[in-house]
Image (cartoon, rainbow, N blue to C red; front, side, top):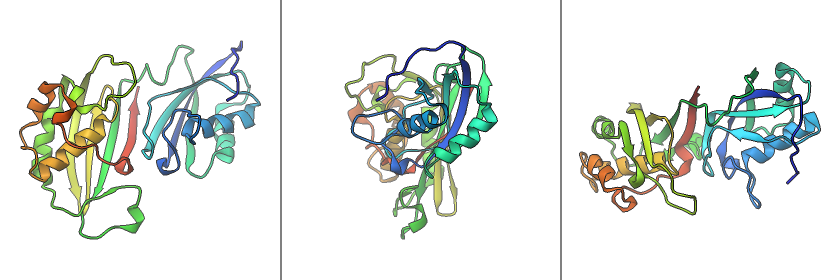
Length: 254
């Protein structure tokens, strides 16, 4: 990895991208895996000739997609934002696109200034696979009562300790409370979507929420058990972690 040096006369830019997560092991740079941050950093360096410190709005898991992902970066290169957008789209791979680029205040931070994020999880609920959604939606051939699941999901709404809905790893354990503002389960034909907005999310939180709702659909968990699962503050009480293929970071609110 290139060494990043501090520079004077920096402009702070907010860059919005969209990407197909199938090709990447998430956002954050890793030593032995291709990530979105790596390809974005490489594209930016081809344009400016330098490496800059990128601030991503979120960590996304391997295989997770983003309709809207925001990056703040302070650069010294004089290129105008509209030209930088065009140049990035020349150098970025086909799986990543720059949607917008604009100058923001010097103290703006893509992660810390985020008010809320919205994720969408897509499920193809049919007895036959859809080849055009392979890698973009979870194929689920069993019955889903979306009205029941939507009713159950309302128990997620509110500010709670979501330890039960977090995969614990080597990361330092901090504040496990998150404020879920909205959760909706709806159907459009064979496509079922679960949409959740919160002020932030724990590691695998949305995927565990989805997995829990799927186990409710299977009768493994009672539909009204979510408040009790939250209160347990124990991962073993919640459902399995749903696969990453159906998850999209849909919107970032500032």
